[in-house]
Amino acid sequence: MSWIWAALMPHPPVLVPEVGRGREREAGRTLEGLERLTASLGDKRPDLLLLLSPHQPYAPGALFLNTAERPRGTLAPFGAPSVVLEPVASPERRKALAVQLAGAGTPVREGSRPDLTADQGSLVPLYFLRQAWGTLPPVVLASPIGLTPRQALSMGEHLAGFDDGLRWGLVASGDLSHRLIPGAPAGYSSAGRVFDGAVLEALKSGDAGPLIALSPETLDAAGECGLRSVLAMLGLCRALSGSPRVLSYEGPFGVGYCNALWEAPGGAPVEGRPGAHPCARLARETVARLLGGRPLPRSGSEVASSELWAERRACFVSIKSRSGALRGCIGTLAPAERSLDREIIANAVSASTRDPRFPPMTAGELADAVFSVDVLADPEPVAGLEALDPKVWGVIVSKGGRRGVLLPDLEGVDTVEAQLSIAMRKAGIADPEGMAVERFRVDRYGEDGRPGGDGS
Image (cartoon, one colour):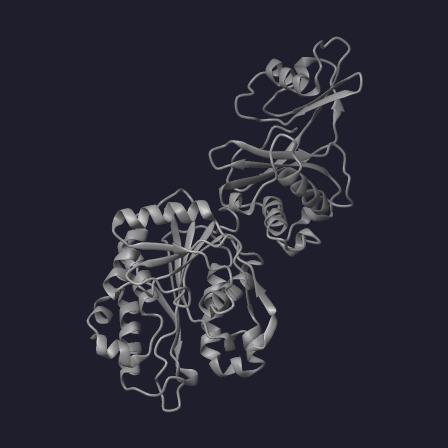
């Protein structure tokens, strides 16, 4: 299943402490709802996000998809220039999504808008999700505002049929009525309460009927911006046989703010991948920060807790595609850093950008990447081949200043002869006469149980 959750999130900049400077506490229920939402998603970081923002460009009669490769925005217009978000785009996944939606009947238009500064609908939700995860997954930015309500509902249903083998989260960004009380930013209208009530009823029941039934006049008088985001989320949930949970609702400042969350039944934690070991999580986080232009972790404890961090051990970091193709593998046979976490960080950087067999990774490849870390025990000499087992022991072969390494338990390497042959080929050793052989054990820590790399 592609969709592991869908969340309705409000987007007033005042919620961001650097902007609100205390005023955010006037929206206490909304902040509590956001805390509940991000806590629920703390271990469910998806491979990709689809973010629907009404503040992305308007495409009449269509869903707008932002093609900017390096979007960037700041909350400087709201007095917080230090709040900068630079979500990583994923052109390949955006194209695949566009093909699916267009084929299903949702009109799609594309255009580039790299400057997100005017798009609080994207920046505010991303701010809180980045706080929850530390780093954001690749994001597809879109606006449903050009769709009719029925088209937005259908688009959500069409999303349910999209499955590219990756785990997606949907952020439906939107505030509700801006006209709840006299003195509200857009003035007052009794339609505001009618609209917000219909949204809450639809979310709690999972039935979009109350919203679809509202007249265009009521919708216009309500002064809303989140209708189509809500309908898209409801369409997705309905197609996947689920209903969201309303986590909070209130109307401070005369504007309706609602947090709601749907999670796929039986969903497993997906910090990187389901059940990811701290070592593999640290490798992924290191590469994500590197490719996103962010400072590398200073220690493993920034990402996850583990008793392993204090050990001084050699390791290999392996990166594969989800199909199993090797993408990078670099490691050490003796510890080069003061602790294992620092060893993993250094080798993750090398595996992603310095493996001579591959070009440096790009941020767009992260969603398809699977990380594993092999932590090595000290090598020991081998007196005879009977002491080897390719499923249990890795090997180091050396002769005349040449050395080759092969990790244990690799797919397709089932015999000692095959293991030694591959290691010799890596070392450029043609004749085994006089060749020294060492063996070593590894503790393999992965994201989803796949074997590691080739130990080169």
